[in-house]
Length: 359
Image 1 (tube, rainbow, N blue to C red):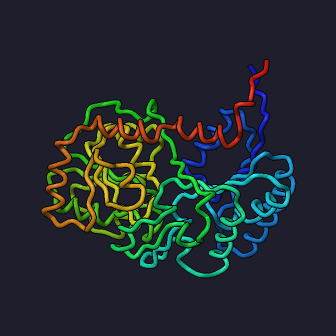
Image 2 (cartoon, rainbow, N blue to C red; image 1 turned 90 degrees about the vertical axis):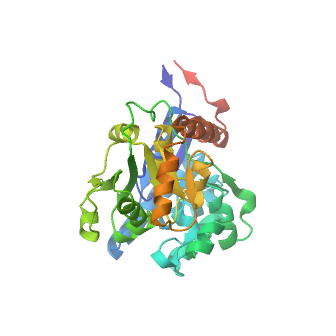
């Protein structure tokens, strides 16, 4: 059986995140022929101009032959494709993940953090796009908790009034047949996962709170996965009950999630955290800070805190987490964020009821 590709898509993105690869795989499985182009961020002016020129040429070649133009995130990589999509009458979509809807002055983070050409281009991108998907409602409406607590201003409707009619909340999706518990839990274990590449990322992902909990709860084992270059040991004096792992493959993460009793997510800014949802599918009890999609994912299946916890609060949360039913965490993610829901959104966007298989 050979699939007949009756739909074509030109998709651009800046970073090769897991969720970008998942969407590419999903579209391919649905019979969409995708030409994907990555424009990596760079601080080299000459390389930036060369990459932009290459993107312009690719856009001129691909967009007239495409049924849809899709941009994961709104940034420099989006402008040429969206302008040409408008000129050629090709429907366009921007997918918003988090960075592209916020301003976090205290951590110098977010597309709207600093005025300048980059922010202006992001605004143009949203105005040019025919449709906008956000992975969590807070990226559209704003997260009041994060604003009052941390001074983080968010929400596309705040930054660009009038966008609401073309915004839709379309969460990322997860495969419960892949992300599932494969072994028995180790008691009094808790995990957090983050791609740790800088001190700013460490703060944004809430790692200092995780380490504070480790000091407050010495009878628990704390694991941090994603430290590729030993950065944490240089930044902090780590407790004896803290172990640090490098970046892990998806298969290795399944095993790690499966053995951990709890999962911790205290990010200042998130869309819908992939690692949190994956861990919950593997029956980790979630403990998270009220902010953006963290609260959306956890709901009443785990524990949420709003202000930085004291030693007593850390200890109480871990004690209460042990009384939670881990199967409810899996059920919540499976029901709310099953990958089939996102697949159906892609089918609707490409009108794939007309796609057929041919011999």
